[in-house]
Image 1 (spheres, rainbow, N blue to C red):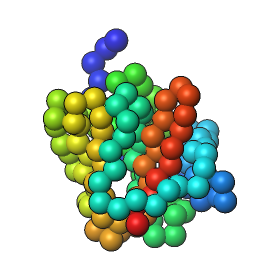
Image 2: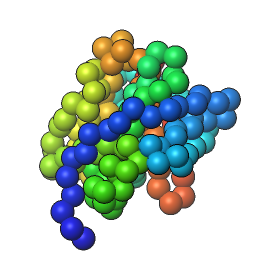
Image 3: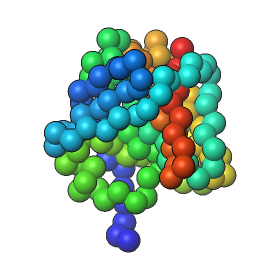
Length: 139
């Protein structure tokens, strides 16, 4: 596997549906995060080993920026083509991915701390692995 780096996200179209959240990538493909997001406050700790995606939208939820946290599988080129960002964290590292949104690594777990007011919109976190998918929205 070649080296991976941080990639800045582009603004993408977002659709908030009754049964989940759809994001249209810059290349025209769409992804759908299933389930009504559970409301959370303060800090969300994902289960170790799960993929973590952070979506910050405008207040209406019609467009936003999607960032993968600590994803080491997707090539930089694919992320750049799709408009998805990525941040890589060192052991026990921490980064601000958007104003009001900080991600940190605690062992093998990812923690997301968010303040939607400071972010200027809505903040969603999607946590998934091969068997399950969870959706959260910071209140």
